Length: 125
Figure: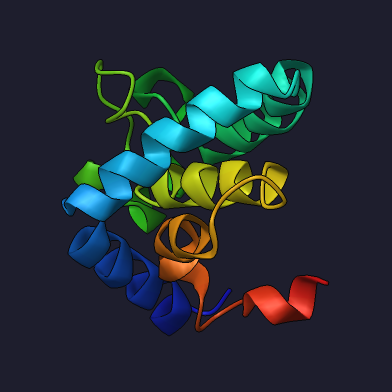
């Protein structure tokens, strides 16, 4: 994904993630995953995604890498701060795709919204 796509995803995520509709849809995803028995699929997909989103810890950054990263890009002690900012919108979209057949259109749309322009949902069918 190009840098402008990355920035667009983050901007769109921040505009929807504080809405009531997003929180309701997020809660519905969790409930639907459990009720549909897709917890193993969630773990199989979500674990590797979060591993790929982990920022390097300060101990893992050598001098060469440090020159290409700013201080904010080197993982902090907090677990969420240790992840790329794309982690949360990516996980939300991934989980929405996992139970797309069980979500309402509105719930899916609000969870997938951050990626709607850079990876249109219709292109995934």
